[in-house]
Length: 162
Ligand code: ADP
Image (cartoon, rainbow, N blue to C red; front, side, top):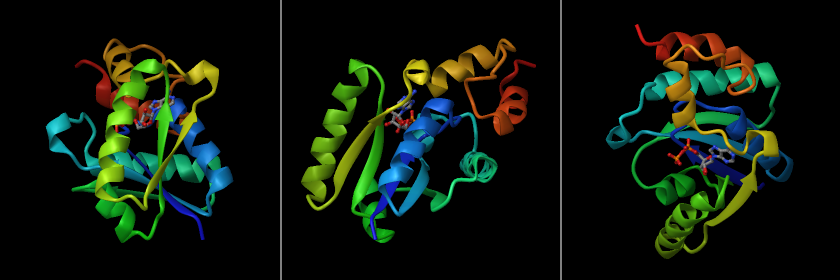
C-alpha cells in the first residue's frame, strides 16, 4: 500500500493546497493531510480548527482515502509512525524551490528511506498562499475561488478585522 503524508501549516487551506492534494490522491492509496503543530509560526487558526476545516473540505469534495490529522516534532518521525514512505509538497514559483530543496536535504539525511514527491497547483492557483488569504481577508475581500467554498464563511469571519 502506498501511503504519503502531505504536511503543512494550512493556515488556512487554499485551493492551491486542494489542487496538490487531488493530484496526490491519483498516485497514492492513502494520503494523510497533516497540520504541523508549530507554535513558533504564530498561526491564526488553531490546529483543531485547521484539521476541522480539512475534514469539511474532504467531505464536501467527496475525497476518498484522505485522512486529516496533525502532528508535532520531526516530520520524518511522523511519516514513520503512520507507515508512510513518501512526503508530498507543493511548488509554486522558483522561490519555493530554494526552501523545499533545503528541507528535502535535511529530511533525506535524517531518514534516507523517505522520499518527497512534488506537485504544482493548477496555473490559476499557482500564486495562492495562505499568507495572502490572511492579508486580503482582513480587509473583507471576497474569498470565492481562493479557498474551498465550504470554508469561505468561517475563514472570512475569523480573519475580518473587527
Ligand atoms: P508550510 O508552512 O509547511 O510551507 P503551507 O501550508 O504554506 O505550509 O504549504 C504546504 C505545502 O503546500 C508547501 O509545500 C507549499 O509549497 C505548498 N503550497 C502552498 N500553496 C501552494 C500553491 N498555491 N500551489 C502549489 N503548492 C502550494
